Length: 401
Ligand SMILES: Cc1cc2nc3c(=O)[nH]c(=O)nc-3n(C[C@H](O)[C@H](O)[C@H](O)COP(=O)(O)OP(=O)(O)OC[C@H]3O[C@@H](n4cnc5c(N)ncnc54)[C@H](O)[C@@H]3O)c2cc1C
Image 1 (tube, protein in one colour):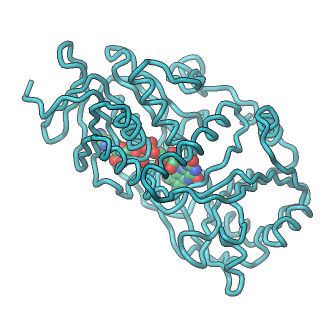
Image 2 (image 1 turned 135 degrees about the vertical axis):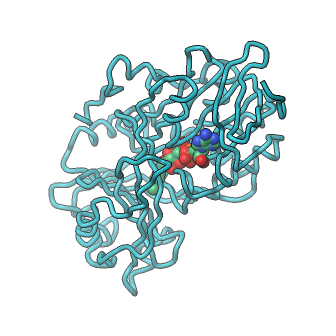
């Protein structure tokens, strides 16, 4: 074995939002932390770059509601620590075809948690948004004031800056090739440049590369499928720009139909609104097709119909490609790797296109798992790797069937 560059309490592999949030939490708790990233920090080849992510608690599965709510608090704390904002408040509107199971279960979760919301039939949606949003007659809107937009690249930078401030060592352009258990040294992490780092524990937050890396180091096959997806920006027609602005109370939104459409109000680019399809095409993260336009024709029709011709639906004027890490049940994987690694290596991946908003609590959970073996106040059974051994489809969800 070659010489060791240094020794750490925790080594984190992957400097996207999850690894950076974990680095912040661990360094803040006094852990000697090393964050390793294969590309440049804040690169655009993974899942955490760009200008906007939605935050809202609209989940039918009740275990996410408290996680989103704690995340709001942790976003607030991190913003106070750094001294600038990454989260911008906005209302949120979900649109469902009739009273489907997803809607009924979301309402039931909200009732249990005392959330404030409004159920809006088509005319009420039109009234609420003064004609800016129009939904079909038999569809139903679910409205909450608890939405918001997070600036992702800025947020990753915030977590990395805070981690650094608390003493973490941050290394980019450092690709991890292998992770091994060593009886004396703990966990040994080897890079493609032949450097070796050792840590008492290791956290793997490798995004779309998670299943590849975990397979290499442990032989374990995680059912995480990378998908290439695309954020699309559309021009708001002249004279209507202010109506779609975050300052003009326009909401973040999701429409649970085919396609499943989501978007954010005009914030990052003047005169443009983000409207995209939730989903994408399977890809190898190292051989990306770089091909925008999943279900584009249906999306154009949706925009034309919903925004009553006030947004130019002829085509997007800006696109940004990105990757999802999809699991069969769309729930996260957060667990000890087990096998020869026991509890020394924790893996967190498969965020299935909805993890960003919860990155602060994911960082908190990872720090808890590393330091105490348990995540305080979080029911972890939904995120275990073993759920796929019991059922390859993972957690049972009524509304997905
Ligand atoms: C277009 C789009 C829109 C989205 N919208 C929302 C939304 O509105 N709300 C929401 O909550 N979520 C949303 N998400 C999901 C959210 O962005 C992701 O869940 C989150 O960014 C995942 O972060 P991550 O850290 O797991 O992955 P990544 O950001 O990909 O980070 C993983 C990092 O690991 C590095 N890495 C991999 N292998 C190695 C290695 N061997 N050595 C060193 N480094 C390595 C990679 O280079 C990468 O930087 C969206 C995602 C996309 C793509």
